[in-house]
Image (cartoon, rainbow, N blue to C red):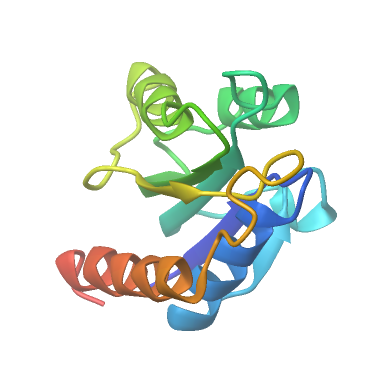
Length: 144
């Protein structure tokens, strides 16, 4: 199975999840905007993640999602971090589905360290273990 893990992370929270997921599925976590972000040949599964920035996904993520096509991406799994509002995972899933992409399961979300003391211990070891379990479950559901 051809798997790719892409993410945007301004604070490092979502990057931690991306690396845990990538390690679990034997892929490399690549930031959106890198040369590896381009999908030139069809892939079976794309894990895509972003954080919550003032209640929304980052504009880089929106731009990246707008270029994805069902012709090159067979399945997508979504993950996200949040400081206060846990909605970006659902927003990403909805945008992907509107573009005709197949979203596998519900998004994996967890708290991420925000300003000051808010969620300062997240993503925690348990959050990362849960992200790994999520990746295993998604891959298993697709026959990996």
